[in-house]
Image 1 (tube, rainbow, N blue to C red):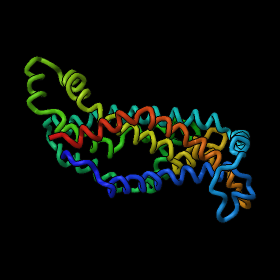
Image 2: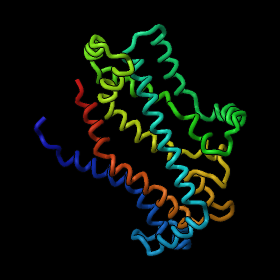
Image 3: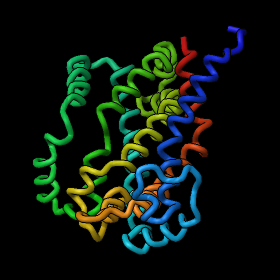
Length: 272
């Protein structure tokens, strides 16, 4: 336990870091050159001086700021809702004893095996019946709770909250809501932070359902970036400059919340 990692470990970590950063650098590289250079097979490996001009063209071509605002709204509301409801459901499955708990948990997990594409048609019909098609509501409502989030929080809370602590709170006269809020919720904070970050990132990068549910005049950022492409000609410098701009909020989020993310992973790793 006291041995320092060797050269091999640091070498693998460095290779993983370079491999993870390479797509982002490649996008910035192509976005900083003109469309003629970007269309070549192997462009120069150093950035050019046209990134901001390409970024300005991308912002002027699509409703960029409106799409950014829509994505921020959808991702934030969905992530907060997923954390709240999945923590509630995870606590119920982990610490409450009720009839059918096991089969119901299996059913929730089994829903993860169903591809999203199979439910698009009935989901679109349902959104149309409610009159939500074309609005941001149709992108938020279907994902307010996820089966993965319920399973993830249940697995964490099984060990994070001892049964004796729950029984002690119940003996002191606490209701189930107070036990959840004052005992389970603080213990679930690291896992909830991880779930929030992953959900935010997943919703931010979602393309399939927003493309179907939202019009071109009211898109999320991923749908708006798709409008930069033409059926006959692709200006890669324009597309990748816009893609790089759309990635910046995620990078800022991970820099700001990275400490909580690492703390949550390490706390789960050393538990028990």
